[in-house]
Image (cartoon, rainbow, N blue to C red; front, top):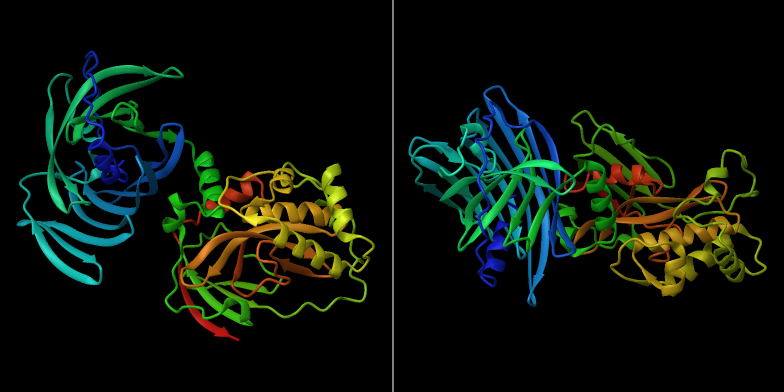
Length: 485
């Protein structure tokens, strides 16, 4: 995976160890085409997951489009290294490069590259630090994009013991680099998975080991005998990781998921109305309405959200609702523990003798916001949050939802975007309680109702609900249409 090559090169300069060669096996089958479809990968360092990578190959009229994206953050011997990348390559049928577009941020420095292969070489336009320049890279013969390097031996029918050399576009160094690839042989990986082992010399002094299946899909990639390992995983597991990581606002995915706006929102806490459009929301994701939010899908495929927040005015009979219809919002679930004795006891303690439902919600919201400290942590149960007294936004929202349901207030867990001044929109979780109408509550920030900088995308906190959220991470672009105070 090309994403972490810049980081791996830094790490390897600290650990100069040559990987041993393995025994050779028979020649490998030759593929007529690369594997079409999507693949997901976890990036791991030791026992810690430090990022993810996503690869998608689609067929075009005269070749293929290869799309790669991902985010990595590593800490090695006190040095923090991070990279975010989105890369699109158009290639011919033989995987040779035609054109490309790359956006990458390495250690906080963003850079954009666009280019195409011409008769004189590779014409590249580079945008970095407000500067724009053009250069032409010399290249003789076939040039491969980074994601195609692993596939090349399959497409050429490489033989064990006979290295092949290719030219690769190095997007980090903005240069053409020669790479040597050789087939080591067939191997059986843990779990009985058959794979073909390759090595290349992408990194000085250290062989880069790659294992692919018979269709050409990368199963595993290892740098420095397992110091950094990229491992294939299923889409559902990848989706769960991405959703949990963005909601926890972990550094390894924060830059990847941040949605910048063209016009800064001055003071979201005082916003009365926000109208904003987003591109990149798939049609499969329903547009949620209510609790001050209205969503419309426009003709150009973008989505316009209108957020109007007014102080909640209690209804005459806020408890008058269909108990059957609202039963799911009072029940316990795997991560909402409304029937747990400790949760019930704490809810009773906080609420006291209060009967007014609006005031009950106010008490619970304020208690969670002031008692539970913010922390960048993995997802945890409401009981863990109660005992630790700290947690991320999910922890706040799950504890509040559990307490509110235990107190008899129909409440649902929701997730989406929240505006962070000076940054843009970040992924966030909060809740909605039913008080004659759904009212949005943010127990992380102590808001009742929430400000107009909250945009709801998902209701519920099951893995299936979270997979919807993961489907938009890294794909959204925002444009502020109107803001009123």
